[in-house]
Amino acid sequence: MTGRQDEAYLLGLRLRGRRVVVVGGGAVAARRVPRLLAAGADVLLVSPAATPAVEELAAAGRISWRQRPYEEGDCEGAWLVCACAGPSGVNAQVAEEAETRRIWCVRADDAGRSTAWTPASGTATDVSVGVLSGDPRRSAAIRDAITTGIAAGTIAARHHRKRPPGVALVGGGPGDPGLITVRGRQLLAEADVVIADRLAPRELLAELPPDVEVIDAAKVPYKRAMSQEEINDALVTHARNGRFVVRLKGGDPFVFGRGGEEMLACLRAGVPVTVVPGVSSAVGVPTAAALPVTHRGVAQDFHVISVHVPPGDARSSVDWAALAKTEGTLVLLMALERIGAVAETLIRNGCPGSTPVSVIADGTMPTQRTIYSTLEQVSRQVTDEGIRPPAVVVIGGVITIAAELAGLARDLTGPGGAPSLVPPLAEDN
Image (cartoon, one colour):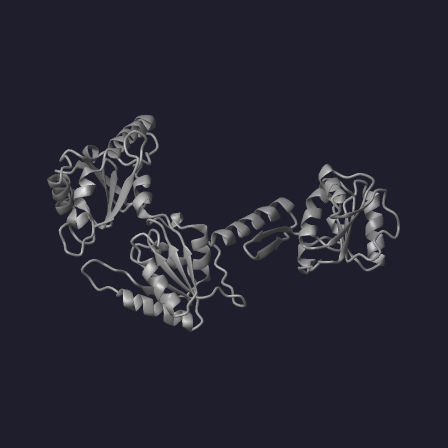
């Protein structure tokens, strides 16, 4: 037998309850026996000695062990034989008996004389992968690349016989497509329909197969937008038509993302829903800017506030007077266009005008930009600097920690060094 890879016919063996004979109890057996057991095989080991791991399997009754050298007739009743004894002559005898009995045989010492080959195999989610290349290390590297890609969702392979049901509300994270969760990316790869928000990681949409329907649900301030009722109707309608729908949202679905409303609409219509958490911009964006929202001795709590309406608006339920008196960190979302009214309200209710403020625009993205200011100056500075949404505003003493971190990072990098992950201070812009 020549051992050419193109002569192999790849086949998945279903070994549950079927006998597999393993001759030799060394390191090769220690690698192969556990996978055979995972496949449900009835494993018979023939070897005068075994590694501690294999011996333990025998002691636990998980495999049968004939503790002696191989003898003619040991392959009887087997569906598969693994010849992995130390002496090559023993493996040749095992292979000869297997050939006579028409049993597939894998020889660990001589692939060219094997009637079967063991591929580099692995499992990702519900997929088993086997690779043959003629070079075991290359096969293992290809296997790892494939299983990693399937597990991460970077290799799109939708189910057709076993499809996910209903709707998945997927938190896409604060913007950088690399910050979506593994589970979120897996479900995105399964989608028939994707309903995507403006702040979702939209770069991932380019990776979808061409037959996936993408619906733009962007809510651009003061411009044309898909209403929440229209989004709910689309989720239910497509799911009822047997399509798997992913609602791709920025941040986390349940942090100012109306995920609760969408889940209610689906469940009331009898549509099953899967919820995948995401990294909320409320903490993900400050973290990306090296701004800790809590710090021992500075802030032991933080408050996340949606400023989609300004202070004093009848629709606002925020107690700004109480927030002005807290020593915790304030994290404001959707606040940039109302930052002047917010700052004025906080100062009027007792918050010092010198309180540090940081504004982080395009958080986690290549265009991320950070400015440092104070309550009394932030509105003017946002205008002067031309800062535009989306942006996260952070107010509180932790900003002094962020400024110190930025300075230390620049000192560590030094002139001409690698660029720092920490944005420069406002005065250095």
